[in-house]
Length: 411
Image 1 (cartoon, rainbow, N blue to C red):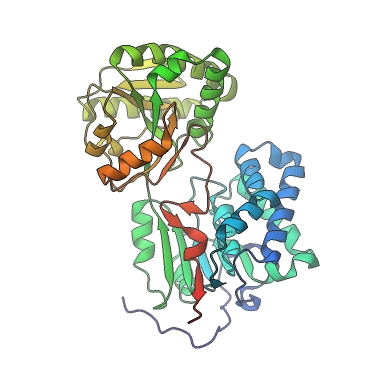
Image 2 (image 1 turned 120 degrees about the vertical axis):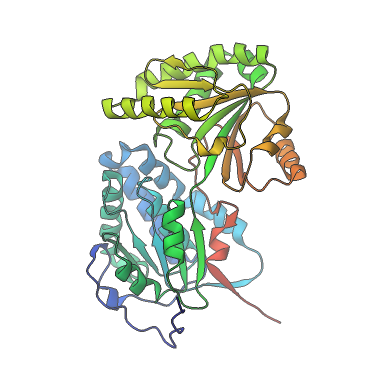
């Protein structure tokens, strides 16, 4: 499809058949960008953090609380300090964000990234409007009504609409940047749409993540530390039912078979205790998990049976690591697992699809060096167990704020 011509000026955006959740009419959108980490943006996000943390309804949703903590002023100040590089920068301009449906608060992080980069933003919130998304949208709309945040309110719109290429095309034609989240097919479809020639795109497609546990470290840790590890793993895997790209589907045990078995005998019962107190598996999800288990057993001859800890944890031990293991994903507490003494075996399975590697008892800096030496196409993050869902301005190997801003060179 041919690209539309770059608009010579910021023409008003036509009114479109969509539902606006926060912000005024599209035609009145302020298109002038700010500098990255502008005081107006920091003040707004700090106020949003305080509003969400003060709300009892919001505090009942861990993902909303996590976003609120991410937006707290002290954290943003650290990000702003780390961003300083001596360059004169400005936001690229109007940015369209298309958020995924399976991570309710993703849209809020995406908007925050665009705002920190200095951009006016059009944010498509999932049409289903999960309760967490509704709570955050309501808080943003209330802050937009506060004259103290008039500049931010004037340059940001939250909206939802059914999948409609005509609407997305009309919005894309106005943009200097797009941030696209979703499955591979969704991303491919959106990227095929024409955009202005200088439009910058960040695409966050489907990814695969895994967990690496040192068997000796798990086996020797005390009961309190073991319970903390189980709680951390629970956050990574169960809070979003393994739907996040960064949630683990494969658990690797670093050590001999004997060491791994001893560690597994401690870790999985500790996780089962945590899950029993924190997680309710619905009947439909239990059936889905059983069906996925049966399908994996057929597709992966490397599977050596199924170990269950009630319906909430299914473990599928692997005799060897199949090259296509990333094509097989669990949900609602279904994990593949394998023991290995040679971490170079990661080179046999890791493709560009791999995103997050969570670890316990592993020297992450040494591991990163090892992965660099292997020249792996994937693994963009190595973080402690419990931090898989901690989204940041460096994501999928991209420096998001720098990419969404431009340099005004002084020569």
